[in-house]
Length: 231
Length: 273
Ligand SMILES: Nc1ncnc2c1ncn2[C@@H]1O[C@H](COP(=O)(O)OP(=O)(O)O)[C@@H](O)[C@H]1O
Ligand SMILES: [Mg+2]
Image (spheres, protein in one colour):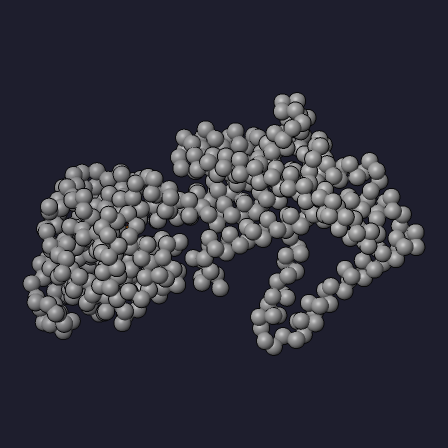
């Protein structure tokens, strides 16, 4: 079931963060949501995740949603495997498979506080994917990782997406991340979807690809930044 | 409490291979108590410290052996321990349940918290006369006094523990579609547990205190009765034995909670170390 938003709005006091969002996320599509810090990306994602009761407008969304947040948000008093199985109806073998998919089989019995940032983030991804969601919401889950770990996780996410085919909404402020991963890039500005740009370049993609270089300039301009710095 | 604190450097000294100086220091710590014991014994032997004020250490030790062999002491300990355990179980359950009710909703808080805050302000030892009027001088007033004393620290700590649970985890629970029951069981209660355990230790302290007071005022069995009875016959040796047993029991239950703490909070250990 596709996700449809129309006239979605949200204000905090007098401050209008989402003005009027009209948007459709198609099944199996990988969408990146770009926007400056404070532009309302997380607000929109939380609305989709059903975490915001005060949002107005119409949101049609499947019940099968999973979320990975910026911080991994693992439950610290549950060992890794128990974190994955929390609230899961599927058998434990499923959870073990999910851990294997993100390369954490050996850490199944570890306490979350003993994991590295990258491991915890992969675990959080496994916890979301094991639910086989139709819609996967990712709120800047890679922004706190070091550059090398981030590259590895990008590959992992693409691989998992190709295998399970959920619709993905990846919130990010990193233009390159959006260009490398997504089928489609949205730019959120002034509470509206200001740009909606498809990316048709084949995967695996390279940063130097001329199409992507051109798109990068466009997107940076849309975000109010020239490639050399703020314009 | 301080005795347990003192035990720490000794453990450390044993764990680290090259700490000879610390081991000497640890041994030194026993010197002054021993000296005090010697002075005490001498004072008693020379008649400087009359027996009706305080018995000699040797007499106290002998009395402890006698009381144990005669079965008086074990029986008294058994009775007192039973009162504490039952009172603790009743008060603890009530305290935690009320904290869950108050912690999970504003309505619950409004219903429970004002009453608990008002009751807390009562000097509960002052309730003993009322308790005797209401419940007579059987087991009930003693157990209930312990229960009452125990329920407050557990209520207050569990309540603040529940309120302190990370809201971000509650959101995770929502996105994982946990039922309310599972939310309470997997997120709320374990999240409040560190604070509840703090309450548990405070509760144990007041439990013994409440029992001592209750047993002094009215009892025909138990440690407090043994002590009170000894006072009638100026048996200061029996009184001191009773006091020592009280503190030993207090320390024993405290270390039981520490053990529980270490097991239940294992998930934090790696990160605190
Ligand atoms: N719970 C809240 N209360 C008040 N203001 C909020 C709240 N959540 C977000 N905001 C405000 O809404 C704006 C958008 O926030 P957010 O969606 O988190 O931005 P971002 O695009 O960086 O994810 C920010 O100005 C933020 O301060
Ligand atoms: Mg954000």
